[in-house]
Image (cartoon, rainbow, N blue to C red):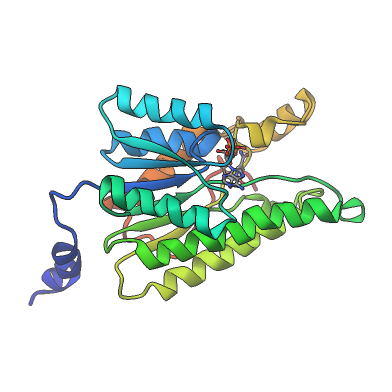
Amino acid sequence: MSIQEAATSRTALDQPADRPRVAVVTGGSRGIGRETVTRLAADGFAVVVGYAGNRDLAEASVKEVTADGGRAVAVQADVADEQQVAALFDTAESEFGGVDVVVHAAGRLYLSPVADLDLAELDAVHRTNIRGSFVVAQQTARRIRSGGAMVTFSTSVVGLAFPGYGAYSASKSAIEALTMILARELRGRDVTVNAVAPGPTATDLFLEGKDEETIARLAAQPPLERLGTPADIAEVVAFLASPAGHWVNGQVIRANGGII
Ligand SMILES: NC(=O)c1ccc[n+]([C@@H]2O[C@H](COP(=O)([O-])OP(=O)(O)OC[C@H]3O[C@@H](n4cnc5c(N)ncnc54)[C@H](OP(=O)(O)O)[C@@H]3O)[C@@H](O)[C@H]2O)c1
């Protein structure tokens, strides 16, 4: 067997070319997740759109896909609830035949100096961001098909260490650790696991509760001198989910316009 044959044999064996690819996107009702739904559908994925409570927005996301001739279905699932997340994956299998890509975009932000932290809020953020990521990772590890990709979400704040982001950044550091370890645990499965770590990106999560001066200050920080858009981040996710991105594994991709 030649070097090239050896390098490609697993992919060639494990990925039937005619099988429709299926993506589960948590947080698919809004922001980065919603943009990712549309972007992956444009690449031909059938998409399961996960959401927490905004049914109308999740259904609108589905309609956008189906209006363009794609396939999508919305499923409510609190990512921290293992039965609801299992049902989300069940739907991917029953409606579309399996799971090839999991984009775990669901998350929440809570800002407070450590001294003033409301510990109930800390628990709530960690329940969604940490427990939720483990629950989604567990279903992914059990069910994702060979040739697949999981994309989790960290934040550039893990490196930037902005004051006030302690609870949130700690939860995202946990997600980075989980991502690295899961990539190694899936050895032999031909599945990649990477984290995308956006900088400030114009979504509800970033914009809510910030005054214009704060938003302008954060937008001016990267050398590209603007906020990220959900589309900027969805492009990175689409690359990691595509065959072109399959050699990237166990990495944190800081997609932030060069903010340091
Ligand atoms: N925007 C930024 O500047 C930025 C920067 C760095 C990292 N990130 C990360 O990028 C990811 C996407 O953020 P975003 O800005 O797009 O957020 P967003 O606009 O606030 O959207 C959050 C999404 O997560 C869902 N969600 C929240 N809690 C959930 C739960 N317990 N179970 C299931 N779904 C839940 C929401 O569903 P409903 O609509 O039903 O509530 C919504 O679809 C997050 O992990 C975030 O931490 C964002």
